[in-house]
Length: 280
Image (cartoon, rainbow, N blue to C red; front, side):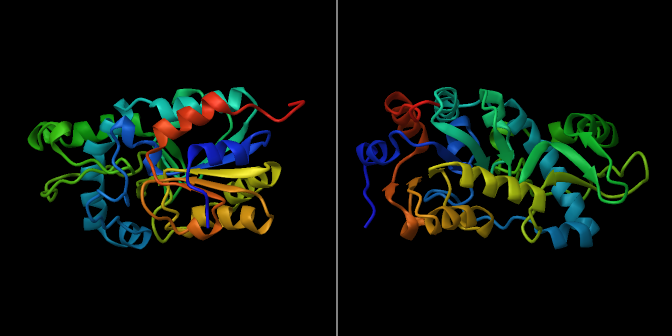
């Protein structure tokens, strides 16, 4: 049975080089709700197949995203993000594999970050492959939909989801923007449900886990295989697995230490008490 305290985590991780795997729970203290926390409402995220196959789904998505992305764009790193920066600077943390798309690890100052599921601030054309900034697309969407943001109310009054989506009831009048280069379909550079993580990204993540002595999971229920596989990989190599998350996770059976708590306080405590491996 896994041990359960911060003291246990410190004892297990002291002197080791650690790879971190983070999920939406790391960003809740920045005002971005998670998908599967104990207090999260039920969510039905759009699948890749729905997005590419149905114009109405795309219209609905872009209308919601046009509201939600501005909220994520204004969000700031929290104490948990900053604690991971401290651990990296101290030589404890080898790098971060994040399932989040909010870029808050980079904003906090983390240097070695693998954005496993992509990033909210870029958009790709599914036809020609051109990549543009989400900020540039926002200008085009504002021009195509004058007064839309005002019509749906303040962002603070709308539920925001961690993929820069937002919940809006009526989107039938919203006009999405086609690719300005070829007229193709634009999609956020985010891995949707039903879509595969690019192989190169997965290989870099495995390499990070292989380079480390242990894995620290923070704020992820490990419900989807894209994150769980790295925990399994570490466990199969007999590397310690430390999980910090509110509620149960699919990786609990692999855990050396499982702390049922929010991430910010625990990561700050680890940053205060852990030092890097000798000679690093």
